Image 1 (cartoon, rainbow, N blue to C red):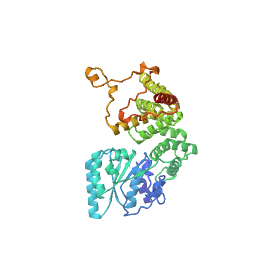
Image 2: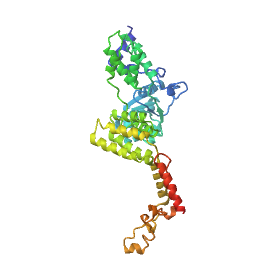
Image 3: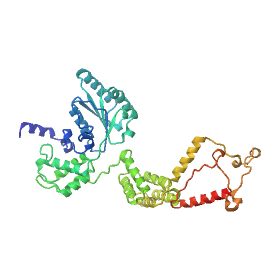
Image 4: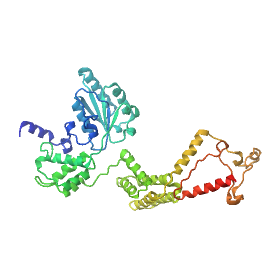
Length: 437
Protein backbone atom coordinates (compact mmCIF):
# COMPACT_ATOMS: atom_id res chain seq x y z
CA UNK A 1 0.00 0.00 0.00
CA UNK A 2 1.55 3.37 -0.97
CA UNK A 3 1.88 6.31 1.42
CA UNK A 4 -1.08 8.16 -0.09
CA UNK A 5 -3.37 5.14 0.35
CA UNK A 6 -2.18 4.70 3.95
CA UNK A 7 -2.81 8.37 4.67
CA UNK A 8 -6.31 8.16 3.15
CA UNK A 9 -7.09 5.05 5.19
CA UNK A 10 -6.04 6.81 8.40
CA UNK A 11 -8.30 9.74 7.56
CA UNK A 12 -11.27 7.42 7.23
CA UNK A 13 -10.79 5.60 10.54
CA UNK A 14 -13.85 6.10 12.74
CA UNK A 15 -15.82 7.94 10.07
CA UNK A 16 -19.27 6.57 9.23
CA UNK A 17 -19.81 5.35 5.69
CA UNK A 18 -22.05 8.34 4.86
CA UNK A 19 -19.21 10.74 5.68
CA UNK A 20 -16.59 8.71 3.83
CA UNK A 21 -18.74 8.52 0.70
CA UNK A 22 -19.64 12.19 0.68
CA UNK A 23 -18.99 13.56 -2.87
CA UNK A 24 -15.67 15.36 -3.30
CA UNK A 25 -16.77 17.31 -6.40
CA UNK A 26 -19.97 18.44 -8.07
CA UNK A 27 -19.35 15.76 -10.71
CA UNK A 28 -19.71 13.07 -8.04
CA UNK A 29 -23.10 14.34 -6.86
CA UNK A 30 -25.92 11.90 -7.58
CA UNK A 31 -29.34 13.46 -8.04
CA UNK A 32 -30.34 17.14 -8.02
CA UNK A 33 -29.79 17.39 -11.78
CA UNK A 34 -31.95 20.53 -11.77
CA UNK A 35 -29.17 22.20 -9.75
CA UNK A 36 -25.89 20.60 -10.86
CA UNK A 37 -26.79 19.44 -14.37
CA UNK A 38 -25.43 21.19 -17.46
CA UNK A 39 -26.42 24.84 -17.57
CA UNK A 40 -27.99 24.78 -14.11
CA UNK A 41 -27.43 27.21 -11.26
CA UNK A 42 -24.58 25.30 -9.60
CA UNK A 43 -22.95 23.74 -12.64
CA UNK A 44 -20.74 26.57 -13.87
CA UNK A 45 -19.10 27.68 -10.65
CA UNK A 46 -15.46 28.76 -10.73
CA UNK A 47 -12.92 30.13 -8.23
CA UNK A 48 -13.61 33.77 -7.41
CA UNK A 49 -17.09 33.76 -8.87
CA UNK A 50 -19.77 35.46 -6.77
CA UNK A 51 -22.97 33.62 -5.90
CA UNK A 52 -26.05 34.90 -4.11
CA UNK A 53 -26.90 33.84 -0.60
CA UNK A 54 -28.81 30.58 -0.78
CA UNK A 55 -31.38 28.70 1.27
CA UNK A 56 -31.03 24.99 0.51
CA UNK A 57 -34.44 23.48 1.24
CA UNK A 58 -34.92 19.73 1.06
CA UNK A 59 -35.63 16.53 2.99
CA UNK A 60 -33.03 14.77 5.14
CA UNK A 61 -30.25 13.08 3.18
CA UNK A 62 -30.83 15.01 -0.04
CA UNK A 63 -27.35 16.59 -0.04
CA UNK A 64 -27.70 20.05 1.52
CA UNK A 65 -24.54 19.87 3.63
CA UNK A 66 -22.63 18.24 0.80
CA UNK A 67 -23.54 21.02 -1.64
CA UNK A 68 -22.52 23.67 0.89
CA UNK A 69 -19.10 22.06 1.31
CA UNK A 70 -18.64 21.67 -2.44
CA UNK A 71 -19.55 25.31 -3.00
CA UNK A 72 -16.79 26.34 -0.62
CA UNK A 73 -14.26 24.05 -2.32
CA UNK A 74 -15.25 25.00 -5.86
CA UNK A 75 -15.29 28.75 -5.20
CA UNK A 76 -12.15 28.51 -3.03
CA UNK A 77 -13.97 30.43 -0.35
CA UNK A 78 -13.70 29.90 3.40
CA UNK A 79 -16.62 27.79 4.64
CA UNK A 80 -17.65 28.54 8.22
CA UNK A 81 -20.23 26.09 9.50
CA UNK A 82 -22.67 26.64 12.37
CA UNK A 83 -25.54 24.51 13.59
CA UNK A 84 -28.67 26.42 14.56
CA UNK A 85 -29.30 23.78 17.22
CA UNK A 86 -26.39 24.90 19.42
CA UNK A 87 -25.17 28.24 17.99
CA UNK A 88 -26.20 31.59 19.44
CA UNK A 89 -25.99 35.27 18.50
CA UNK A 90 -22.43 35.39 19.87
CA UNK A 91 -21.36 32.58 17.54
CA UNK A 92 -22.86 34.44 14.58
CA UNK A 93 -21.08 37.66 15.53
CA UNK A 94 -17.76 35.87 15.97
CA UNK A 95 -18.11 34.20 12.57
CA UNK A 96 -18.97 37.52 10.92
CA UNK A 97 -16.05 39.29 12.61
CA UNK A 98 -13.61 36.66 11.33
CA UNK A 99 -15.16 36.91 7.86
CA UNK A 100 -14.70 40.69 7.86
CA UNK A 101 -11.06 40.33 8.94
CA UNK A 102 -10.44 37.69 6.28
CA UNK A 103 -11.96 39.95 3.61
CA UNK A 104 -10.02 43.05 4.70
CA UNK A 105 -6.64 41.32 5.10
CA UNK A 106 -6.65 38.79 2.30
CA UNK A 107 -9.57 39.74 0.06
CA UNK A 108 -11.05 36.32 0.76
CA UNK A 109 -14.76 35.55 0.76
CA UNK A 110 -16.60 33.56 3.43
CA UNK A 111 -19.54 31.23 2.99
CA UNK A 112 -21.42 31.05 6.28
CA UNK A 113 -23.20 27.69 6.35
CA UNK A 114 -26.00 27.43 8.93
CA UNK A 115 -27.54 24.00 9.23
CA UNK A 116 -31.19 23.81 10.32
CA UNK A 117 -31.49 27.58 9.92
CA UNK A 118 -35.22 27.42 10.61
CA UNK A 119 -34.31 26.68 14.25
CA UNK A 120 -32.69 30.11 14.61
CA UNK A 121 -34.87 32.57 16.50
CA UNK A 122 -36.00 35.82 14.92
CA UNK A 123 -33.34 37.65 16.94
CA UNK A 124 -30.61 35.35 15.66
CA UNK A 125 -31.78 35.70 12.07
CA UNK A 126 -32.03 39.48 12.41
CA UNK A 127 -28.41 39.51 13.63
CA UNK A 128 -27.40 37.96 10.29
CA UNK A 129 -29.30 40.40 8.12
CA UNK A 130 -26.95 43.44 7.93
CA UNK A 131 -23.92 41.24 7.24
CA UNK A 132 -25.66 39.34 4.45
CA UNK A 133 -26.89 42.62 3.03
CA UNK A 134 -23.39 44.15 3.16
CA UNK A 135 -21.82 41.06 1.59
CA UNK A 136 -19.54 40.40 4.56
CA UNK A 137 -20.68 36.79 4.33
CA UNK A 138 -22.54 34.79 1.73
CA UNK A 139 -25.17 32.87 3.64
CA UNK A 140 -25.82 29.23 2.81
CA UNK A 141 -28.74 28.11 4.97
CA UNK A 142 -29.96 24.53 5.06
CA UNK A 143 -33.45 23.58 6.16
CA UNK A 144 -35.85 20.67 5.99
CA UNK A 145 -38.76 23.07 6.58
CA UNK A 146 -40.53 25.43 4.23
CA UNK A 147 -38.38 28.58 4.48
CA UNK A 148 -41.49 30.73 4.11
CA UNK A 149 -42.44 29.55 7.60
CA UNK A 150 -39.00 29.24 9.23
CA UNK A 151 -36.95 32.13 7.83
CA UNK A 152 -37.84 35.77 8.52
CA UNK A 153 -39.11 37.64 5.48
CA UNK A 154 -36.32 40.25 5.47
CA UNK A 155 -33.60 37.58 5.38
CA UNK A 156 -35.51 35.39 2.93
CA UNK A 157 -35.86 38.30 0.49
CA UNK A 158 -32.06 38.54 0.30
CA UNK A 159 -31.56 34.86 -0.47
CA UNK A 160 -32.36 32.57 -3.34
CA UNK A 161 -34.32 29.51 -2.28
CA UNK A 162 -33.00 26.32 -3.86
CA UNK A 163 -35.21 23.26 -3.58
CA UNK A 164 -33.58 19.83 -3.27
CA UNK A 165 -35.58 16.69 -3.94
CA UNK A 166 -35.48 13.34 -2.16
CA UNK A 167 -33.28 10.94 -4.10
CA UNK A 168 -35.04 8.54 -6.45
CA UNK A 169 -34.78 4.77 -6.11
CA UNK A 170 -32.36 4.44 -9.09
CA UNK A 171 -30.17 7.21 -7.63
CA UNK A 172 -30.07 5.50 -4.23
CA UNK A 173 -29.25 2.17 -5.90
CA UNK A 174 -26.30 3.76 -7.70
CA UNK A 175 -24.99 5.14 -4.39
CA UNK A 176 -25.21 1.69 -2.80
CA UNK A 177 -23.33 0.08 -5.69
CA UNK A 178 -20.69 2.81 -5.56
CA UNK A 179 -20.13 2.22 -1.83
CA UNK A 180 -19.83 -1.55 -2.31
CA UNK A 181 -17.29 -1.11 -5.12
CA UNK A 182 -15.12 1.62 -3.57
CA UNK A 183 -12.24 -0.08 -1.76
CA UNK A 184 -10.77 3.20 -0.49
CA UNK A 185 -13.68 5.08 1.03
CA UNK A 186 -16.43 2.49 0.83
CA UNK A 187 -16.92 -1.21 1.51
CA UNK A 188 -15.13 -2.57 -1.54
CA UNK A 189 -12.38 -4.19 0.51
CA UNK A 190 -14.97 -6.51 2.10
CA UNK A 191 -15.81 -8.17 -1.22
CA UNK A 192 -19.54 -8.23 -0.50
CA UNK A 193 -22.27 -9.00 -3.03
CA UNK A 194 -25.77 -7.53 -2.96
CA UNK A 195 -28.53 -9.29 -4.94
CA UNK A 196 -30.94 -7.06 -6.83
CA UNK A 197 -33.93 -7.96 -4.63
CA UNK A 198 -31.96 -7.11 -1.47
CA UNK A 199 -30.79 -3.87 -3.09
CA UNK A 200 -34.45 -3.00 -3.69
CA UNK A 201 -35.16 -3.69 -0.02
CA UNK A 202 -32.27 -1.46 1.03
CA UNK A 203 -33.44 1.37 -1.23
CA UNK A 204 -36.98 1.06 0.10
CA UNK A 205 -35.71 1.31 3.68
CA UNK A 206 -33.80 4.51 2.84
CA UNK A 207 -36.94 6.43 1.78
CA UNK A 208 -35.08 8.89 -0.42
CA UNK A 209 -32.45 9.61 2.25
CA UNK A 210 -28.83 8.95 1.19
CA UNK A 211 -27.58 9.18 4.76
CA UNK A 212 -30.01 6.52 5.90
CA UNK A 213 -29.07 4.35 2.91
CA UNK A 214 -25.41 4.40 3.93
CA UNK A 215 -26.26 3.83 7.59
CA UNK A 216 -28.35 0.75 6.88
CA UNK A 217 -25.85 -0.59 4.35
CA UNK A 218 -22.95 -0.15 6.77
CA UNK A 219 -24.69 -2.09 9.56
CA UNK A 220 -25.85 -4.79 7.12
CA UNK A 221 -22.27 -5.15 5.88
CA UNK A 222 -21.06 -5.63 9.46
CA UNK A 223 -23.65 -8.37 9.95
CA UNK A 224 -22.53 -10.15 6.79
CA UNK A 225 -19.21 -11.97 6.65
CA UNK A 226 -16.36 -10.65 4.53
CA UNK A 227 -16.55 -12.02 1.02
CA UNK A 228 -20.15 -13.15 1.44
CA UNK A 229 -23.59 -11.95 0.40
CA UNK A 230 -25.66 -9.25 2.10
CA UNK A 231 -29.06 -10.85 2.65
CA UNK A 232 -32.58 -9.56 3.17
CA UNK A 233 -32.28 -10.58 6.83
CA UNK A 234 -29.17 -8.42 7.23
CA UNK A 235 -30.92 -5.39 5.73
CA UNK A 236 -34.07 -5.91 7.79
CA UNK A 237 -32.03 -6.17 10.98
CA UNK A 238 -30.02 -3.06 10.07
CA UNK A 239 -33.08 -1.04 9.11
CA UNK A 240 -35.14 -1.95 12.21
CA UNK A 241 -38.33 -0.76 10.54
CA UNK A 242 -38.96 2.42 8.63
CA UNK A 243 -38.86 5.80 10.29
CA UNK A 244 -41.81 7.65 8.86
CA UNK A 245 -40.81 11.11 7.65
CA UNK A 246 -43.27 13.32 9.47
CA UNK A 247 -42.44 16.35 11.62
CA UNK A 248 -45.56 17.42 13.48
CA UNK A 249 -44.49 21.04 13.31
CA UNK A 250 -42.85 21.07 9.90
CA UNK A 251 -43.22 21.03 6.17
CA UNK A 252 -43.85 17.29 5.85
CA UNK A 253 -46.64 17.63 8.39
CA UNK A 254 -48.40 20.27 6.31
CA UNK A 255 -47.86 18.25 3.14
CA UNK A 256 -49.45 15.10 4.55
CA UNK A 257 -52.35 16.99 6.12
CA UNK A 258 -52.94 18.78 2.82
CA UNK A 259 -53.09 15.61 0.72
CA UNK A 260 -55.26 13.91 3.36
CA UNK A 261 -57.89 16.62 3.03
CA UNK A 262 -57.59 16.76 -0.75
CA UNK A 263 -58.08 12.98 -0.92
CA UNK A 264 -61.37 13.23 0.96
CA UNK A 265 -62.41 16.22 -1.15
CA UNK A 266 -61.53 14.24 -4.28
CA UNK A 267 -63.73 11.31 -3.12
CA UNK A 268 -60.81 8.86 -2.88
CA UNK A 269 -61.36 6.75 0.28
CA UNK A 270 -58.26 4.61 -0.33
CA UNK A 271 -55.91 7.59 -0.42
CA UNK A 272 -57.72 9.34 2.43
CA UNK A 273 -57.30 6.34 4.76
CA UNK A 274 -53.68 5.87 3.66
CA UNK A 275 -52.71 9.46 4.54
CA UNK A 276 -54.69 9.31 7.77
CA UNK A 277 -52.78 6.16 8.70
CA UNK A 278 -49.47 7.81 7.80
CA UNK A 279 -50.23 10.55 10.29
CA UNK A 280 -51.33 8.23 13.08
CA UNK A 281 -48.47 5.76 12.65
CA UNK A 282 -45.97 8.64 12.72
CA UNK A 283 -47.31 9.71 16.10
CA UNK A 284 -49.78 12.45 15.20
CA UNK A 285 -52.36 13.21 17.90
CA UNK A 286 -55.61 11.54 16.72
CA UNK A 287 -57.52 14.54 18.04
CA UNK A 288 -55.76 16.73 15.50
CA UNK A 289 -56.95 14.39 12.73
CA UNK A 290 -60.45 14.39 14.19
CA UNK A 291 -60.57 18.19 14.26
CA UNK A 292 -59.66 18.22 10.55
CA UNK A 293 -62.43 15.66 9.92
CA UNK A 294 -65.03 17.80 11.70
CA UNK A 295 -63.98 20.91 9.77
CA UNK A 296 -64.05 18.96 6.51
CA UNK A 297 -67.58 17.69 7.18
CA UNK A 298 -68.88 21.27 7.32
CA UNK A 299 -66.54 22.86 4.77
CA UNK A 300 -66.56 20.28 1.98
CA UNK A 301 -69.70 18.16 2.50
CA UNK A 302 -72.08 20.51 4.25
CA UNK A 303 -75.75 20.27 3.35
CA UNK A 304 -75.05 17.90 0.49
CA UNK A 305 -75.14 15.30 3.28
CA UNK A 306 -76.33 16.82 6.58
CA UNK A 307 -75.44 13.58 8.37
CA UNK A 308 -71.73 14.07 7.61
CA UNK A 309 -71.15 16.50 10.45
CA UNK A 310 -72.94 14.14 12.81
CA UNK A 311 -70.70 11.26 11.68
CA UNK A 312 -67.60 13.40 12.28
CA UNK A 313 -68.76 14.47 15.76
CA UNK A 314 -69.70 10.88 16.58
CA UNK A 315 -66.19 9.76 15.60
CA UNK A 316 -64.73 12.39 17.91
CA UNK A 317 -66.95 11.28 20.79
CA UNK A 318 -66.28 7.61 20.12
CA UNK A 319 -62.54 8.17 20.17
CA UNK A 320 -62.75 10.01 23.48
CA UNK A 321 -64.70 7.05 24.85
CA UNK A 322 -62.46 4.18 23.71
CA UNK A 323 -59.06 5.78 23.01
CA UNK A 324 -56.31 3.92 21.17
CA UNK A 325 -55.88 1.45 19.60
CA UNK A 326 -59.57 0.80 18.94
CA UNK A 327 -60.20 4.51 18.38
CA UNK A 328 -58.74 4.24 14.88
CA UNK A 329 -61.90 2.38 13.83
CA UNK A 330 -64.37 5.30 14.20
CA UNK A 331 -61.75 7.52 12.54
CA UNK A 332 -61.56 5.16 9.58
CA UNK A 333 -65.35 4.91 9.38
CA UNK A 334 -65.70 8.69 9.37
CA UNK A 335 -62.96 9.24 6.77
CA UNK A 336 -64.39 6.70 4.32
CA UNK A 337 -67.90 8.11 4.82
CA UNK A 338 -66.78 11.68 4.20
CA UNK A 339 -64.68 10.71 1.19
CA UNK A 340 -67.69 9.10 -0.53
CA UNK A 341 -70.28 11.67 0.59
CA UNK A 342 -71.66 14.14 -1.98
CA UNK A 343 -69.75 17.39 -1.77
CA UNK A 344 -70.70 21.02 -1.28
CA UNK A 345 -68.50 23.88 -0.12
CA UNK A 346 -71.41 26.25 0.37
CA UNK A 347 -70.82 26.63 4.11
CA UNK A 348 -67.48 28.19 3.18
CA UNK A 349 -68.67 30.35 0.29
CA UNK A 350 -71.85 31.43 2.08
CA UNK A 351 -69.98 32.70 5.13
CA UNK A 352 -67.49 34.45 2.85
CA UNK A 353 -70.32 36.20 0.98
CA UNK A 354 -71.98 37.31 4.22
CA UNK A 355 -68.65 38.52 5.60
CA UNK A 356 -68.03 40.54 2.44
CA UNK A 357 -71.39 42.33 2.84
CA UNK A 358 -70.72 43.03 6.52
CA UNK A 359 -67.30 44.50 5.74
CA UNK A 360 -68.55 46.56 2.81
CA UNK A 361 -71.63 48.02 4.50
CA UNK A 362 -70.65 48.07 8.15
CA UNK A 363 -73.22 47.83 10.95
CA UNK A 364 -76.43 48.38 9.05
CA UNK A 365 -79.43 49.04 11.33
CA UNK A 366 -81.85 46.28 12.24
CA UNK A 367 -85.24 47.09 10.62
CA UNK A 368 -87.58 48.44 13.34
CA UNK A 369 -90.27 45.82 12.69
CA UNK A 370 -87.87 43.05 13.68
CA UNK A 371 -86.66 44.65 16.87
CA UNK A 372 -88.25 43.40 20.11
CA UNK A 373 -91.24 45.48 21.21
CA UNK A 374 -91.11 44.28 24.81
CA UNK A 375 -91.39 47.63 26.60
CA UNK A 376 -93.59 50.70 26.20
CA UNK A 377 -90.54 52.67 25.07
CA UNK A 378 -89.78 50.05 22.42
CA UNK A 379 -93.32 50.17 21.12
CA UNK A 380 -93.32 53.97 21.12
CA UNK A 381 -90.30 53.81 18.81
CA UNK A 382 -92.15 51.49 16.44
CA UNK A 383 -90.19 48.40 17.38
CA UNK A 384 -91.98 45.20 16.52
CA UNK A 385 -94.79 46.97 14.65
CA UNK A 386 -95.79 45.26 11.44
CA UNK A 387 -93.99 41.99 12.23
CA UNK A 388 -95.85 38.97 10.90
CA UNK A 389 -95.44 35.75 12.86
CA UNK A 390 -94.91 33.05 10.20
CA UNK A 391 -96.71 30.31 12.16
CA UNK A 392 -99.93 32.33 11.88
CA UNK A 393 -99.88 31.89 8.13
CA UNK A 394 -100.37 28.98 5.74
CA UNK A 395 -97.20 26.94 5.30
CA UNK A 396 -95.56 28.89 8.17
CA UNK A 397 -94.21 31.33 5.61
CA UNK A 398 -94.55 35.07 5.08
CA UNK A 399 -92.91 36.71 2.05
CA UNK A 400 -90.87 39.24 4.04
CA UNK A 401 -87.35 40.65 3.67
CA UNK A 402 -85.27 40.18 6.82
CA UNK A 403 -82.03 41.69 5.58
CA UNK A 404 -81.19 45.33 6.35
CA UNK A 405 -83.03 47.66 3.97
CA UNK A 406 -79.79 48.70 2.22
CA UNK A 407 -79.01 45.19 1.00
CA UNK A 408 -82.46 43.70 0.47
CA UNK A 409 -82.33 41.19 -2.39
CA UNK A 410 -78.70 40.19 -1.84
CA UNK A 411 -78.08 36.48 -2.46
CA UNK A 412 -75.71 34.92 0.05
CA UNK A 413 -76.55 31.23 0.13
CA UNK A 414 -76.36 29.62 -3.32
CA UNK A 415 -77.00 25.88 -2.81
CA UNK A 416 -75.68 23.31 -5.24
CA UNK A 417 -77.48 20.40 -6.89
CA UNK A 418 -75.28 17.95 -4.96
CA UNK A 419 -76.93 15.38 -2.72
CA UNK A 420 -79.50 16.60 -0.23
CA UNK A 421 -78.61 20.21 -0.97
CA UNK A 422 -80.58 19.89 -4.19
CA UNK A 423 -83.71 20.00 -2.02
CA UNK A 424 -82.62 23.46 -0.87
CA UNK A 425 -82.50 24.61 -4.48
CA UNK A 426 -86.06 23.40 -4.96
CA UNK A 427 -87.29 24.92 -1.68
CA UNK A 428 -85.70 28.30 -2.39
CA UNK A 429 -87.32 28.35 -5.83
CA UNK A 430 -90.72 27.61 -4.24
CA UNK A 431 -90.25 30.42 -1.70
CA UNK A 432 -89.17 32.84 -4.42
CA UNK A 433 -92.34 32.04 -6.39
CA UNK A 434 -94.51 32.66 -3.31
CA UNK A 435 -92.76 35.97 -2.76
CA UNK A 436 -93.57 37.12 -6.28
CA UNK A 437 -97.26 36.49 -5.63
